[in-house]
Amino acid sequence: MILEVNGLTKHFGGVRAVDNLNLVINQGEIVGMIGPNGAGKTTTFNLITGILKPDSGTVKFKGENITNLKPFQIARRGIVRTFQIVKYFPNVTVFDHIYIGAIAKNGLRADRKTLEPMVNETLQFLHLKDKKNVLVKSLTIPFKKRVELATSLVLKPKLLLLDELMAGLNPAEIDEYLELLRKINRELGITMIVVEHVMKAVMRLCQRIIVLHFGRKIAEGPPEEVSRNPEVVRVYLGEGAKYA
Amino acid sequence: MLKITHFLKSKKTWFYILISLLLIALPFMVSEYITYVVVLTLFYAMIVSSYDLLLGYAGQLSFCQGAFYGIGAYASALFSIKAGFPVYLSIPLSVVITALVAAGVGYPALRLRGAYFAVTTFFLAHFVYLIFLNEVWLTNGPLGLRGIKPLEALGGIDFSSTTNYYYLVLVCFAASIYILYRTANSNLGKMFISVREDEDLAESFGINTSLYKLVAFVISALVAGIAGGLFAHFFRLLHPSTFTWLTSEMVVIMTLVGGIGTIFGPLIGASVVMFILEFLRFAPELRFVIWAVALIIILIYEPRGLVGLVERIRRVKR
Image (cartoon, rainbow over all chains, first blue to last red; front, top):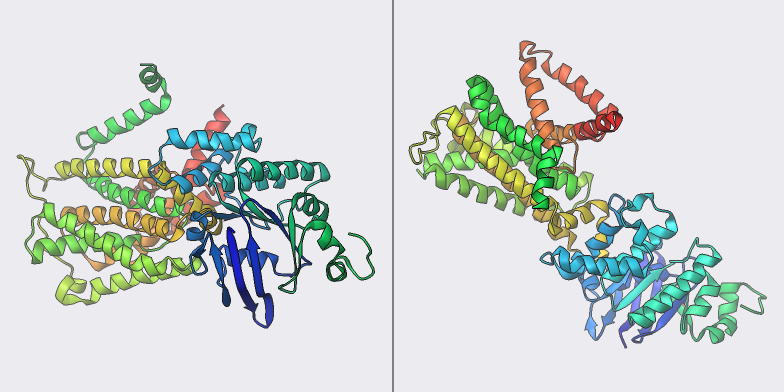
């Protein structure tokens, strides 16, 4: 067990964005988190990574209570996330963007000789080598996402939270990303929670799926099981749908 | 060896050598008055390029560099007058005081973001000015602080002469620019850039953004403090009006005119601004009007400042 969430609750005014949520994530898993808009998926990510403070409940990472830590402290312990609306440092080159991540991971004293191979390795891994000297702001959205992911990887996270990484990609790009995420999971041993609206991708990628609705967990299990769950079919896929 | 020949062939190298030689030969080429203006320009150049580390790299807009300049100046003058410390001790002490004030103010103020932080620093600048003006028992208020000792002679060099002091300031200036330039291009500088570019993203990459903002703020204050200390024992008369909010504003303007995020750009900004204002002394009433119009034109035509202008001219030439 790498992550344990107990009774997590967050209100925004009268809205219960996350309501008494319990989660257990095991080492090495790829877990999908799905649910209609406003189900509380992104809020859950924000609570886990410390961007929001929960009203009640705890988050434990590798046995340590991280509920009240600051975002950068949580990141240093090995939980790194990407953002639903892609975030990046616009006015730096792709190389420097990842280099900043390498400094963040290895400290100010690390010299260029140790950091540069790490950056190059990551560039290679994500096929970004030929974009190395391009300013991030001039890249297309899929490439910006890739740079964000690359910087996350250079931080060598234990747990990666991906918030709609595949939104807006075409089917070919989705296939490429699926392969990439599997590779990250398998070769780098990184546990992942994936929030995704591209249902086909989630079903193919994840070993386990958690379904949220109005901040509550309404179903959990392997993809086939969840997609047949009548409650899930009702709230998520619409009344009267027979198949996912 | 290859590196050295490359170094000597580069146009940039010769440009820097030329500038350095000019600066070294300056007191022999121009009148004492001009040397005097250049010394004042060097103080501003130090303040402005350290401010660039805060604004251009860490992305924090502040309006209180003038206050740190003033704190450095007053603290050093007071240590030397009231406590009788030699200037060699009073300037370092004043720099420590400036850094402590910056850390004390920056720690809570940097929790605010953007415009809120800027406004807070603006009030700090005014608050410090009011202390200089009203705490008469300490600062002699509007009458000004008189009788500040010059830097003691060292190894037979008399620092009360403008020329000799010019060289001292030049050395301090060169050292601080070198350190600022190295800092800006180090890992620390990259951390500053990450804060400027996206604070939330930097934080989610495990970067302690509050710490780096504070470090940038304190470094910029520290260099302004050094300039202030050197100024006090050069001008040897301190008046609160030198350190009004306008001084801080001037620093921001010089930085923007020069071009932020380059360390060297603001140097050009400081020199141009100081000399334009000096040349316009023949028209005392119109001076700031002409200056303001020039400023607006520069920033409309080239928002990246004079550095951007230089780059544009180069590209046209090619």
